[in-house]
Image (cartoon, rainbow, N blue to C red):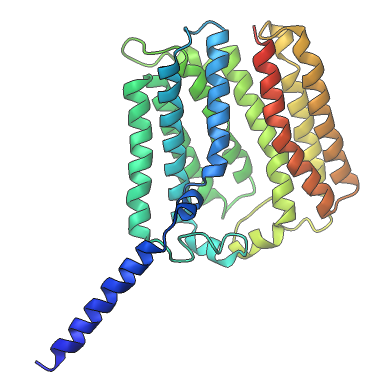
Length: 320
């Protein structure tokens, strides 16, 4: 009988701690757990892909179809972000810039995050399948598989993880593009994935991500080492190797953006803004190669953020 008050007090303490933990999980924590700001990139590129699909004749514009496409894709992106952070709690806790995230800071139990991740991912993929089409749902599922089961574990094993991550990051505009075709008959219309518009959007996003992440990687290379991640720039103290890679992939981006007018995917008016914007990225990457320092890397990083909406906007204007 004498143990009863002690047990009761312990139970009460657990309940209070649980309630306090739940109460401390704020809207900002949800935004951080789902990487909501990063997911805005998914919204923008999915929207762009859908409009390109409509403009190239895959199907008529439908506001409801677009809404369902963005909703499903965004929820799947939210879910993948939750699972990614669940898989990297220990690494995030060792890095200053990520230690304050909800999971390493213990503001949300891992079990709750796991259920949330499943709900978001599952609903997103199923919603695309039911309300959009099979192709967009399949692409969302492939994105989840590549991001969670290949890219995330690979970050601790191989520097090639950045290339794999860029594959998953380049799929959302193709989801939007395929969605523009609307619902089809039974089966997957594989030809949608190799349409010129789909391939261009994939290539644009793939090559854009590489200078973007190289700049981040070099600026925070010490943090990545602490987290146990194997990245290109970890041992690149001078920044020369990182800068060279940024030049290489920026040139690849420039060449990719020059393609649409030559294959009839856009008018020739797209070529000047495409070459000018990508050419400036090549210049900034060259600066990082020859004069590597943190301010130069930051300029490249921030320019990549400006570049994408500008070049996508120009392409949407001149796509044929």
